[in-house]
Image (tube, rainbow, N blue to C red):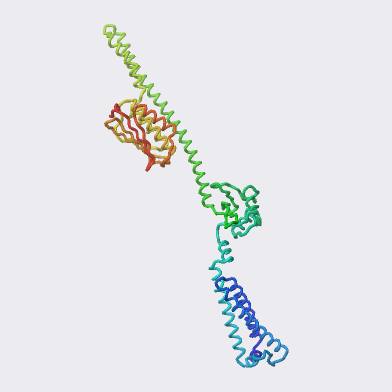
Amino acid sequence: MAELYAWGWQARSLITLLLALSVLTQALATVLSFYSRKRRHMALPELCILALLLFFSLLYGQALESFGAGLLAPVGYGPLRIGIESGAFAWLFLAVLLLLLARGVWICLLRYREIKGGVSALSVKNAMDSLRTGILFSAPDGFILLSNAQMQRLMTAIAGKVYRNGNDFYALLVSGDLRPGCWRRSFEGRIVCLLPDNSAWRFKREELRIGRKKHLLLTATDVTERWELTAQLQRQNELLERRGEELKRTIGSLYILSQEREAQKAKMRAHDLLGQRMALLLRTVRDERAMDYGLLNSLSRGLMDEMKAADEPSSQDALESLRQEFGFIGVEISLEGPLPEGRAQGALLAGIIRESATNAVRHGYATRVLVRLAQTQGGLQIRVTDNGTPPPENMAEGGGLSGMRREVEARGGALRVTSRPQFALEIDLPGGYGCV
């Protein structure tokens, strides 16, 4: 022990520091062993080692006190007097102290890993605090039993404080005044709070029964990405609806222009036909010697029939007019197969193509419409497809398709609509629809 007295004050200060650290680490190891369910039986041995360290501290303190008073005589402790008087006692004391300090640190780390990896109240709380989702358990009267760190952060952001009653906080979410910069919305039937950091949190409350006890669970889920996507889809749907209305008006205007142009062509054809017939009639009337009353009767009787036929455009003219109309808005109409012979059949075909192309552009945003014509033994088969977005499988027929179906069935035909894998309109017309 005399060697310990001979050491400098720096060495004695270091030993004092080591003693203090050893006592603290061993006390922590004892507490962690007590809280560890697997190692709770090790708490008593750790407590004994802590008592040994306290004894070393008292022994060292008494030695320093004697040295400070100028007394180099060894202290008491009965049987330990021989060990204290030994020359190697100071070095042995320091070695044991270092060993106990290292052991205490190792035991603390070991017990901490066991507690963190095992199931305990502390591990459950740490696990819940690490969740991105806010969780709050409360009793029916609102008394909060457990609330993780995320829920407390949301309380502070929404209300400016941490609530002690879950019912009060939920009442605030439903109809209370939120902090400035926060907004309340509804999403999928749930409450959504928009925070100043542009994040969106959906709150859901449900009842849990554990045994005979009833508890309330309030969760907060981060739906920022889904909220942004939903808002973006809503904006796109609104834009598409506006574009659809614009296309509808544009197609209507083009149809009016086409009708005016067809009317103008009919007037020109009627003018030419009337001029031709009037010239023949006047020439015949003036030339009394060559007057043929039979010729006059035939010219006058056939005049109205020819004027009526001149008012109905041919299939080729009707198709060309449709191509020009939809070509103005960037929609291509292609035709495969022979055209019907009669003008009435051409008018029906033009109406079918017009209605199909209009629906394809308005609802499917198509840019190309393909019409296939095939002559069958029973008559004419028409198939119309497009490159637009297919409609839903449970599509309901609108006024255009319903009117087309009535007109086709009135002529003895049949109309079929399919939506997968792409939209297709098939029409079968009975015989009498010859093709050119």
